[in-house]
Amino acid sequence: MSREALGDFLRAIERHRPLRREASACRNEAELMALAHSLGFSITEQDLSQDHQDTSMGHWFATSRIRRSFHSPSP
Image 1 (cartoon, rainbow, N blue to C red):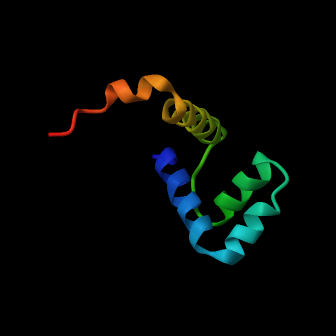
Image 2 (image 1 turned 30 degrees about the vertical axis):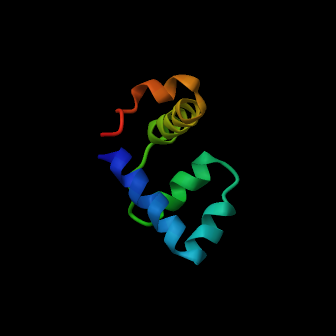
């Protein structure tokens, strides 16, 4: 559930300029989590760590040559 909360928090940051400014002023993950918690988003350090890993893996997969082998042929 908290991974879902992280997604909700990130969407809120994207959509609301004042919140985006507050988030960009955070100096570390602890401050970012405190901001999220103050707004009612229940996220954990593990969520932030896992999101970073998922982003890194997604970027690697998108730029990897093996990616093409996983696409279905066009009908």
